Length: 374
Image (cartoon, rainbow, N blue to C red):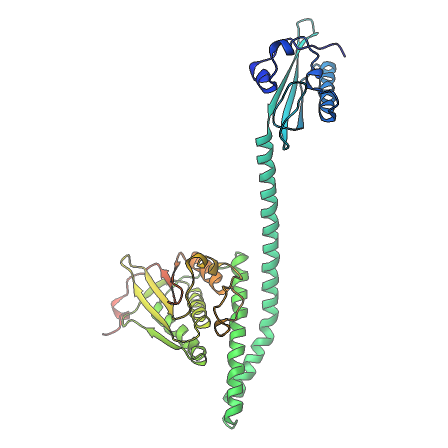
């Protein structure tokens, strides 16, 4: 390779290397980056010479990425005081004369550390996102499969219990109580499985909203009646304030009732004693709301967002208040509310209970023939 000495250097290079023009001009290009006894800079010098060789033989630009442990160029070689590696793009550009010979070579250095680190961080984030997505999909498929497999034998069990209860008039009080406990436990297990299935549908993007016009107060009363035995078993007073006039909404009745059931079930589970109140009303903007209030331990403000996350359950203040379940009820409530264009609000204070309010957009006006008489 012909001898190549520095003929010029711009201010950026001189500033980065802390060299003066007199210390650069006339020196061999590769020697500028080779510190005696430093293996790292010797390797860099060898790579720079290789780039010069390629550019001179091909008469074409050459570009490469080099990593340097250090943050700056200093006298005596490409040395840095720092310990973090930096990345530089080195471009070697031969300038060819009219006769076809190389007149001189321009070699530029660009610090691309921030860019490469950002690219690496983006790649890592994308990989983590894809891994989380695959994990979530596998979890959802597993939950759906297990729930379907459990549903069939449980349905058969519930039917047998119902048949025994219908034909159990001759059973003594002790056996009737046992059947009642079996029925209650089977019902809770059925609700858990249905929650798992609904969560799997939501996570899998398979929730279909089937809108129809119905009276929300009827759905509230139906759901309250469904949970009344459970509340009585726990010694709780379950109360429902039902309006006299219809509260018409245009939405998916099944999904609305699933939200209400999860909210009421959650209130019962977390209330050791006292009451659970359900109220129905209408806000100034026409939105209908259902509020489920309990006299339970309440939720600290710092933990209120957690209760809507899947499989999250807050610590109970006492063993008596430790609930069952798998921590999916409120996650299902949040996601269904989003699918319906509704929202959930939580107001809670420790030792003062909690109120979950389910807001639904107003439905169409109630025709005169559907209005109840006062």
